[in-house]
Length: 141
Image 1 (cartoon, rainbow, N blue to C red):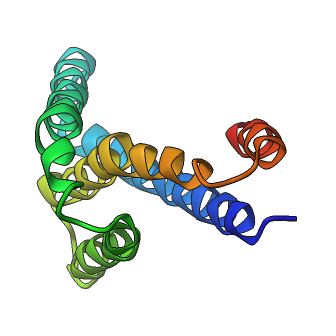
Image 2: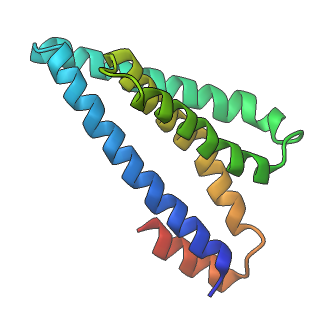
């Protein structure tokens, strides 16, 4: 009914698919690089803690000031370009290292947790009440 919601739904679906793919690549690379379970669990815990800290700093420190100077539509266009560039670089490597694979997941999750979630909420603001309510319900599930 609302083209904006359809575009948001497709973007979220594509992002979740990419996130799953990156996570599988990361776990596979981590399990070969760090074969011991306790060391791997510690590595993964520190990795996700770093994602959360950086996302928090971006969301509460950098983005509030940046959004007064940057148009949200520009961020919507730049985010896929950043990810595509990084993933292209990773794909041309014959055997990407753990740090390269984890960097892709780190970049994706950081962008998702800080920028994309904020932009998702901004999409709903100009919509009528019914579109907002039904759109969030359908897209959020």
